[in-house]
Length: 351
Image 1 (cartoon, one colour):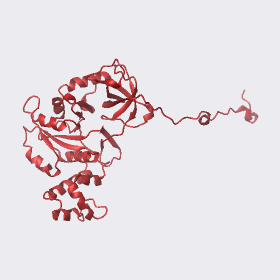
Image 2 (tube, helix red, strand yellow):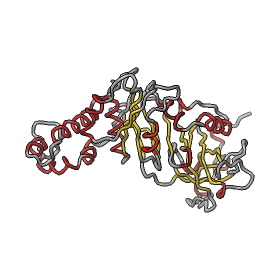
Image 3 (cartoon, one colour):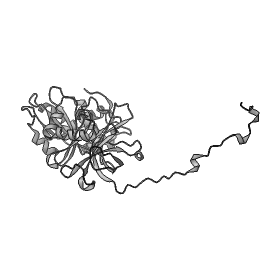
Image 4 (cartoon, helix red, strand yellow):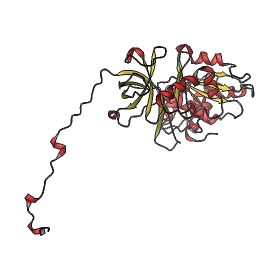
């Protein structure tokens, strides 16, 4: 039988100890001085494929050309910090590379570059795509499908913002003359290579592309159907076999068309990072003021612009700068290209 409420006193109440004060927590985190360095080559649903040197890993792994593939997860102390293909990381745990091994990523080293995009120009959430690449290869077919200049322009803006060098890779030149398209981008002085598919491997013009990729970490982007995968398979003849090995280690079996993957060029002289086909490229994270810095012949003329000038308005001082000839003989076309990129930042479209 329960006692009346009035019969309870203080001795009947059990006071729980204050856990926060009972055991002070240390803010110190492990230094992981023995962590092994590696490069992230693929990301798949919380599992990271990391390439490490055999000299940095334990004996007994499955090394290939002095390297081995290690599967890892993100350590709890990293919190929600993102890890993307191209990241230089530090690993602890089982770095043997055996099929059942699982290491932990405990550090992500500072990134030299970061290619980002947002869902659209109004979305404040930016999405990291690839880290530490130094060249963005914008792949576009000259026909079937038709080129999408506005999407290409957006990729160029993203490259400039990330501090990466852009390169136009035009495919299917056997179906259309590349000259008109190249003339429209000549004022931007973006280097380009042209390939065709006159043979089964689609290798015409491939040597020029190899030369442009040599010694660099290059990201290939483009919308579906432009021949990006054909280029990757031609550049890295054993790409499908190498990807199969990675999938065995991760146990996921994801195809490269659904996730980014880094592939070393034959001879070890550079990397290509293949990315899934894109339909849009949001630039909400890009400050338009940074775009002008990639037009040094025009940037000096902004001193005459009114405060807050968008460089695409009637009061812009760049018109007088170009008219005076101080921007050089190509000043007018360069200014139009600059303004085209600035408008690209304001118009979200994949056409």
